[in-house]
Amino acid sequence: MMKVITKKINNTDEYSITRYSISGIILKTVIFIILYIIYVYLGMYNFEEVLSNKMRVKFIIGSLPFFIFVYLEAISSSSKEILCIKENNLILKKYILFFCYYSKAIKLEDIREIYCEKNKNYLFFSTDLLKNIKFRVKENEFEDKIYAFGYKLSEHESAEITNEIEEYIKVKNVEKENLSEKYNYSLDERYNYILNKILDEEKLFISEKDNNFLINGDSEAMKDLELFKDMNFEEIDFYIFYVNYLSKKEYENKKVLVGYNGTDGKEVTMSKLKEDINEIRDSRSIYRREVENE
Image 1 (cartoon, rainbow, N blue to C red):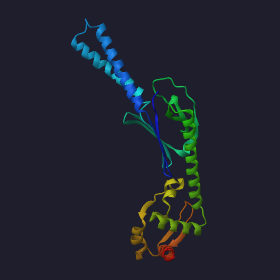
Image 2: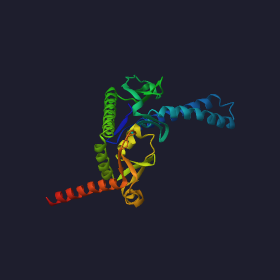
Image 3: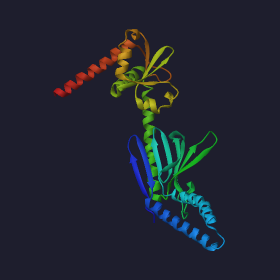
Image 4: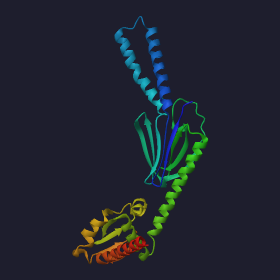
């Protein structure tokens, strides 16, 4: 029986599974070489008297592409299969040997259902019908499409991986809901949260609307929340922002909307924003000194 190796990575940023079978590739390669030699030998032997050397070469060259095609189809089941969840996308990849011939990115929000199918597999070739984990995905308003992963997965493995993926997606959805909730805080709460996030990450996101600056923080929110997808925010280093905006006299009275969520944001002047940021920085410095002195 072929040994199928499954490798997993599961952390806060990524979940991935890689499956492959080195023994399967070696076994099928040996079998196909033997079959091809037998095929060529029988072809030559049966027509030995009528085949010239030139015709023999043509016979070998003519039959080789077909055998290569069948061979590649056969080893595709033993070559790498990768399932990866990253940046709100589920990515499926298929390989033949070391070459990726298929890659599909699916938005997590478009996955309607994940389920296992028990497949009795006695075929030599890999098809999606013989893969155990199925993803029913919204293709458009009227149609769903099925994608598959897990050739020769056992029933236990299929159930375990399905549960892990569902749990991972559930955690990501909760995180997204928490981020969305923070951007619906009251203006003062939101303002304080964004300023602290800017200082934590040492970067912020800036845009312009109606001749006002929009300032946001929290890179996870900017990346994950749908409300920011169509907004043209530019990421900028905090210290560059401090020098180029907060410290410039020409921007002192410029209006800024902080924590803008598509509807509203805390309106302050650039000078007020600088004052509040410095106040938080000073309070943090005082706290650190007190902790160090204890």
